[in-house]
Image (cartoon, rainbow, N blue to C red; front, side):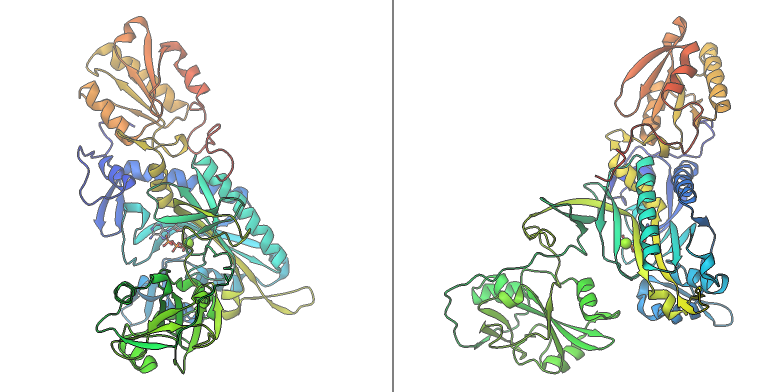
Length: 585
Ligand code: ATP
Ligand code: MG
C-alpha cells in the first residue's frame, strides 16, 4: 500500500483521554478512532492488526480440530432465562426490545446459544466430542470502559465451546486448548503467564487465564516464590494460618460508645487498636437468604470465594433497610456477637483474632474484647478474602507470594454440566440412554491482545510491533520521492515485495525524510528500507525498528536479505523464528 493513500491520521501529541500506552499509541498512530465510550472504529492499520491476530487464532484453532461457526449477536431473552442468567448477569448485559415488545440482548458471551445449537444438532455419542468456535463482536456494558481496546463495550472475541460424553474427554480437549493457546501467544511473540482463575459470570469449575505480562496490566498475578503455583488476584488462595499460642488473658466483653464511627479506620484509631483486630462484618443478600461475612479489618473480602463457599449464584451487598432488619442497627455497626437469624461465614484469619472488636449491632456502639468460641461462632469458615502480598502460598504452604502485573487476554474453562443440565442438552449413549453433555469453553480477546502487544512492545518513538502482528512488515522510504532515481528504485522494490506476498508499505509522500521516518516509527513497522544518498553506490539502508541496527545492502541483494529475515515468501500470519520463547513465562 502507498502511504499517501493510507487513511492513518497520525497525531503529534498524546490525546488527553488516553491513560495507557497502547491506547495513546493506537490513537496517535491512526489505528483506531473513538465513536462512543468503549466503542471504536478500526482504521485500515488497526483492522490489519486485528485481522492478523484473528488469523493466527483461526489457523491454530483449525489445526487443533475446532470448527468455525458464526452465531448471531442479537439473542432472545428466553434462552437466557433458561439458565437464569437473564436475571443474574446484571447491568453488563445490553438489553433491548423489538417492535413487538419481545426482549433480546446483545451477546456478551454465547454459552446459551451454543448449548441450544448442540441440543438440537447433536443426537448421538458418535458425534462427540466436538469443539465449535467463532470470531465475533461481543457487547458488554462495562461499568468503566477504558484503556481503548483493553476494556471496550463492543469488542472482538474468539469464543469456543466443546461438548463431551465424559470428564476424561473434556480434560483432553481442555489440554488441547491450553496447548493451542500457548501456540497462539507464542506465534504472536508475546511474553505471558498462565494462572489459575476465578470463573466469574461464566462459571462452572476449573479455569485458567492467559496473562500477557506488562507493568501497566490491570490484573495482579500472584505466583509462589518456591513452587509453580500461579493465580489471578481473584482466585489466589491463602495458605493456612497456624494458631499461635499466646498468654493473652481474655477480658470481659465491653460495649464502647463510638458516635458516628463506621469505618475500620475511624474505629481502630479511636479504640487505639490495630485494624487487624477488627472483625469487619458485611451483610449480603443471596438467593438463599441473608448472610453475615466476617473478615479481618485489614483484609478485603473476596465475593467470588464467598459465592463459591456458599454455593450461591446471586450475591449482593445488602441495602440499609435489610441491614437494619438483620442487625437492628444502621449501616456501619454490624458485628457477630448476638447476631441471629443469618448465616455467619468467617474467614480463616478471623477466628484467630484473640481480642477483637466489631460493631455492637446498635447505633453508635462497638464491642471490644471479643473472643471466637466464647462470644460467637461461625456457621461456616474458610478462605473468603483476597490474598495479600505477604501471605503464604496455599499449595506448598511455605513459599511467599511474588506479585506481578498482567493483562488477561485469554480464559479457558471446564464448565461441566452448568449449562447443559439447565438447558436439557442431552445425547444418546451407546445403550440408547439420554445423558447430559459435558462442556468446556475457551475465549480470547482479539482487540485486547493487540493492545497488550503494544503494552509489551513500545519505546519513546512509538509502537514496536512483533513481526506477526505488524500491519506492514516493511516500509520502503525514499528520502526524496521527487528524485527520479530514488523513486524508480523504490517502485521496483515495492513491486517485487508485493509479488512475493510481503505486507509492504511504500512511503511515497513528499515530506522530509525525518518526518516520514517519525511516522513510520510511531506506527511501529518492524523494518524500514531507506533509499537515499547511498543509492549512488547502488546501496540502500535496512533499519530494524526494535534495536535500531542499520545495514547497508546492495540493491540486487535486497530480496535475498528479506528472505533471510523471514519476510520474503512468508506473508502475513507466519510463525516468527525464535520469538515468544515457546513456553509461558
Ligand atoms: P475481565 O475480567 O477483564 O472483565 P472477563 O473475565 O469478563 O474479563 P471473559 O468472559 O473470560 O472475560 O472473556 C474472554 C476474553 O475476552 C478475556 O480474556 C478478554 O481477553 C476479552 N475481554 C473480556 N472483556 C473485554 C472487554 N470489555 N474489552 C475487550 N476485551 C474483553
Ligand atoms: Mg476472565
